[in-house]
Image 1 (cartoon, rainbow over the protein chains, first blue to last red):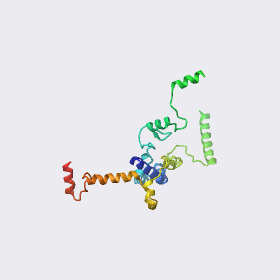
Image 2 (cartoon, chains in turn blue, green):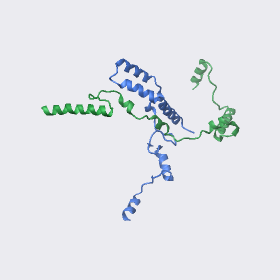
Image 3 (cartoon, chains in turn brown, purple):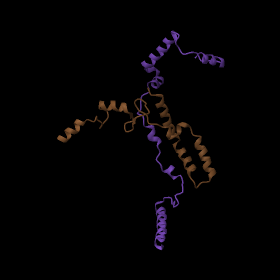
Length: 109
Length: 108
């Protein structure tokens, strides 16, 4: 079962996907200095009518295992503890625990 | 300083020609045209795929009631709620009037 915060984040992601093209069109008009000021202002007002869950800045990458919002290792989409657990189990390809003895043996061989 | 000025105008004509040939917009004064909002990649499609897909057992059970899928955790939770109600530890009833809600607020 997913965390409520993760569900909210998923909602935001879908909202961004749906309204992205129209938002971009309004952004283009609003930021275009060659257009008349009134048109730009109208576009900006339209931008303000979009909901909270349609802005890409609302989206936050959370841990896909626990839903934790901080300490996410973005390459794996996991929080630092889940990353450690998975890595120690050998479930993450190319990740292994660092060990000073390893480097000694590499130098000697 | 005749030579650099001539070079400058030549460079300007060169960029204008280049813009004509490759069909890009000629913007010598760097006016904000908002083109960057159209040029940028759409982020939505990759955003949606961030979380790995999971199976929603409750939704499947609701869709196909004949399959007899039982979510043991949910069953346990409902049983616990019933048990708590029987012992008089259930959630209080919702306040119908404003006076009710005031009374509950005072008790706290």
